[in-house]
Image 1 (cartoon, each protein chain N blue to C red):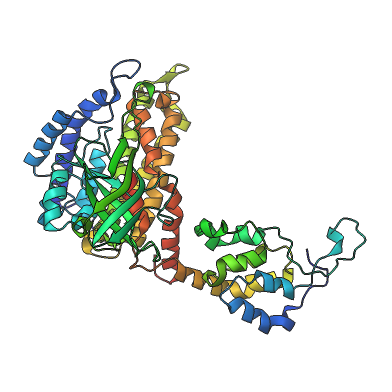
Image 2: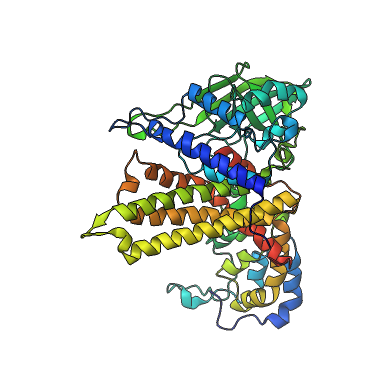
Length: 148
Length: 390
């Protein structure tokens, strides 16, 4: 739920690419590059929280992560559903699919648009590599053998 | 392009068709049961009958069509296997022409005598203990085989859907190197009946209205000792077993869907031509005609896909993508066919004790690995993304 005036990607493009190229969930750092919390979405409280960039602990990034979907045992290592927890439990095993960034309500739409329009093609080729090699055994064949 | 089957394959097809029509289809009633409450329905044919049929198939030279010649089978092509499987799937009688899982093709000479040949001749049953209770895949396998002083200590629990029998052995997957991934740290062991620490329960047929339901077999390994001689293939290479033959099995399984769908079409046609509603045969109704046409079109498409993929497999071409496509299409096809057949039949397809009911049940069973269809889609997508021509 970012501010109306969002981060101009042209200004942060170099560092953003650096973050997205790093083999670790990029959501937290993309959040810090964003404009922060829009107070229009809060209840009427005295404290001014406009522009705050903290993780809301909504857990959307944890739910969106395909690696954790494949290895649920990793997710069970912590009760926390924050971007920090995501970084810790996924770490360098990150698929770099950027799904966590797209799922985060605190990341600016401008950054999300940049990822979708400029980075997705790279993401697809990387994911394609992860599907598995032709020479690797297809475990599903064994499952079919057991069931039929 | 020639769509004509070679003469020798036509012969295999016609022999197996005649066998199914003359020998297997008349046995359907004994499988389905005769009494109104289906108490005498059985899961399998009596052992004597099965051995009698086995003798007949051996006489016509088709026993072990999917088994390589060096292992004593006929070693027929994938296409021939598909043609036979298509015919066998047209009956609910569970009988195969000497089918043995290709995982056992990697047996060494000693294991071949002790395990493979008795399974091939239906004297022993192989319990495929690959899955674990409560686990969907192999990613989080808990079964361990700890190596101490050259021997392995197996601990864990497995479930198997294999056919239960008097004499049996287990084909068990266990992690020998837990630190390595599932593709490299898993070893396959052959554990014979009566080995200390190996216990089996379940596998019973349920009677009454659930006559056709079989309990899965539970295999418990409690400090069960195995030697290096009990390892099938190489240590840590369980998922490389049968790699030469397993991919083609996916195509043959799809041929099974085609055969079952063909029988459903035959039964549906008879129903449409004999059942009347509001004074006319239902075959005259456009909706029933449309359902029949949809069934026939889908069967035709699936059959062409199966044959083409099998032909490629026989040419030695890569078939991973084709097998994935065939699996997706055939699985969805049999569902659609069963669905349309239920519309044509109205209620009887749900009524226990009729062949149609069993076929519709089987249609669902065929897609019991449906969750894996996404993986097949990934295989196809990978080739598209690589820029390969589809």
